[in-house]
Image (tube, rainbow, N blue to C red; front, side, top):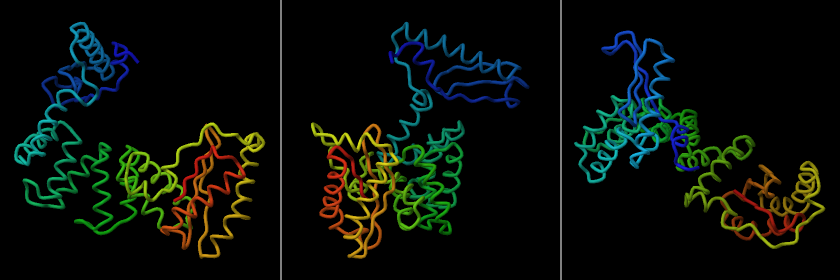
Length: 323
């Protein structure tokens, strides 16, 4: 989309609404975080509408002057955050702390999360797990993914709190919803410990795949098939592909039962069909059970055996992921 006035107005610029705490008395004050734009009115809805009108006029002027316009969360507050981040990276913790403690007053959730990290690690401040947790919880109330991830780690590894795996999973899930790669990997490891729980294995598989697709090295090692490109210029099995998804699943499950599971069961293993899709491409997600879990042979030779067998039933234009 062209970066026009309509484009920038379609972006979700964050703003805050204040009331009763300012010189405006009982009026409502609206402030956009990325711009020096404020509007007020005694009516709540009108205050928001006026602020958006001011925003439109401001962006229009900036475009006419050919000046750069920030994306959401990259304006005034973000610039200070970058200065603090640079200070932190150069180990000027005092400067970073002084900026983030001020930014936290403006409800900057990333500043809150960073303060939590400083107390967690004892960087520029005395290590204090209780204060770290407090800052993470404040940032978590704004759904900050970094804060949620660190709270999950605290509950998973008993850092300053009692171990609570259910709380850890909850915080990991919140971070995963914001596409946090490390959270996806760690949540997958927890959920995949019990491979008899089909619902948990399915969620764990989704998390591991998400982490692998985001480039997590260990997730790519765990999930066999990520390095296999989708075959092209192959003859498709039109008969199989013309079947309903129910019939396709029936054929696949029959293949697993007759040709694959008996081999795995001999060595104390097994395999689960976790998920199947036939649009836009055919994709199978399978999970090992028993002795196959973590076996190095399963990730190489066994995978090729399974892949080759299924390709004979379908065709070679299929994605097969096995965990």
